[in-house]
Image 1: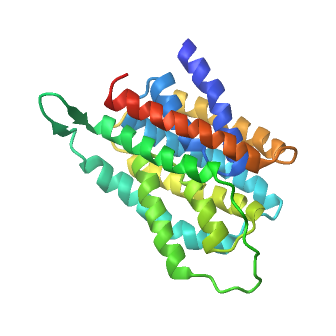
Image 2 (image 1 turned 45 degrees about the horizontal axis):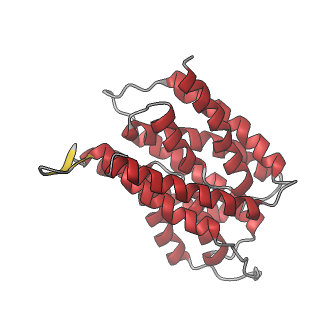
Image 3 (image 1 turned 135 degrees about the vertical axis):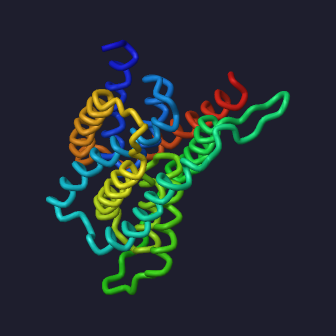
Length: 267
C-alpha cells in the first residue's frame, strides 16, 4: 500500500469520528481526502464519498437506534424526497454536465474543477452553520409538523448532497432542530439514518457499466471510517459535541478557502 493511501485511510478514521460525534461533516472531509491525498479524480471521489459516508452513517444510525435516539417518522419525511433528489442528481444532472463548462484565452473551467469549487462553496456555508452555536428550541409534544416545509427542504438538501457527493448532515440537523422541533440527541441519530439512505441510493445512481470502481480503496477507506464512527460514538458520551462542532467548523472553513484557491487560482 502506498504512503498516500496509508495517510488517507488514517484520515478516514476522522471522517467516522465526525459522524459519530456531531452527526455530520463526514463527506466534508472524505472528498478532499480522496482527491488531494489519495489522488482520486474529483467526480469519482464524490461517488466514493457517498458510499463511504452511507455505510459509516448506517453503523452510527444503528447504534443510535439501539439507544432509542431515532425518530423514524422524520426519517421517512426527510428521507423520501432527499433520496429521490440525490438519485436524480447523480443519475441525470451530474452526467449531463459538459466536460468543459467555460473556456477563453486565460481561463478554462472543466467539469472536475466546477464540481470541486461548488463543493468548496458548500463547505464554507457548512462551516458557518457549524461555527455558530445551535440553540435548541423547546420541544412541544404533539406539535403539528410542517410537512410541506420538510418535504421541500428535504428535496433541496438532496440536490445539494447529490451534486457534491455530501451526506448533507450539516443541513439536515438544523432542519430537524428548528423545522421539525427535534431534540439535539434525537436529531443526530435521525440524521445518520437519512444521511445513510440518501448516500447509498446516490451511489447506486452513479454506477455505470463503463465506470471502474477501485473497490479495494473504497472498502478499506470505509472500514476505517466505520472504526471512527465507534470512536466518535464513545467520545460523544465524554466530550461536548457542540464545542467540537465549532472547532471543526473553522477547519472546514479553511479547507473550503484552500480548495477554491487551489482549483481556481492554481496556488
